Amino acid sequence: MVNKIIESSDVHLFYGKNEALKDINIDFNENEITALIGPSGCGKSTYLRCLNRMNDLIDSAKVTGKFLLNGQDIYAPEMDTVKLRKEVGMVFQQPNPFPFSIYDNVVYGLRLAGVKDHRILDEAVESSLKQAAVWDDVKDKLHESALSLSGGQQQRVCIARVLAVKPKVILMDEPTSALDPISSAKIENMLLELRQQYTIIMVTHNMHQASRISDKTAFFLQGELIEYAPTKKIFLNPSEKQTEDYISGRFG
Ligand SMILES: Nc1ncnc2c1ncn2[C@@H]1O[C@H](COP(=O)(O)OP(=O)(O)OP(=O)(O)O)[C@@H](O)[C@H]1O
View 1 (cartoon, helix red, strand yellow):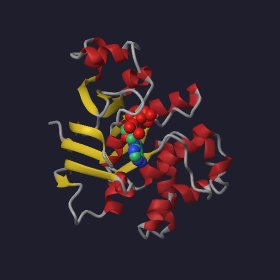
View 2: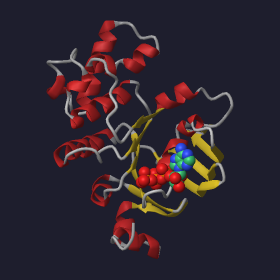
View 3: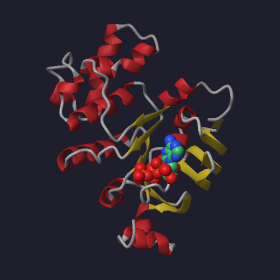
View 4: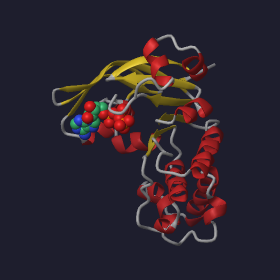
């Protein structure tokens, strides 16, 4: 049976007077990859940030609507946002390793959670870096600065840092747009593997990427969700003319 891991309904978000999200309704199934697509400024990143309450950090942002993670209200006053962001982890467009060693980057969240046992930390480093497909690149230099790595390697270390705390959902905001095609392909292949264990929601401007790796695609335009459907349908037989125009490069 398919399990809905995240449900969102009647979502509106205002930055001051600017309504950036207009009545969005999307549910996400467990172990699927969803691509959020649409032209610049249509609200994709804003919507993504709603899912782990990153918009709480923006004073002017006011969000209404309902968001559930496994049936639990993400916006309940008693929700612990640190815990939420562990369960709903985030990878950003620019690789953002901390200026520490590769090892210390990966165990950062575990140490914050109070884990001190070296055996547990060592195991987490190895398994997360393997899952993030960067273990072979870094296994002999775990105690060197993460900043000494290439951009593509840094991004995979950042993904390992998220995986180490065993999230349920991984949010990705254009995770490969700053990378070369080979690094991007490595990350795409890794995401297809990770889908067996995680639910992935990814903003991308790369239509080929969306069609190659996602199960579902959501097309946003000017703060509205125009169409949300299996990726094959969106790319081969969209219901809405605006979707077709965007996919075929007629605007955006
Ligand atoms: N921190 C903010 N404060 C005020 N307005 C914002 C803020 N972030 C985004 N916006 C506005 O909200 C709207 C949606 O922006 P958002 O970044 O979500 O779009 P996007 O689809 O992710 O764009 P892109 O593809 O360029 O990243 C835009 O009009 C943008 O100017």
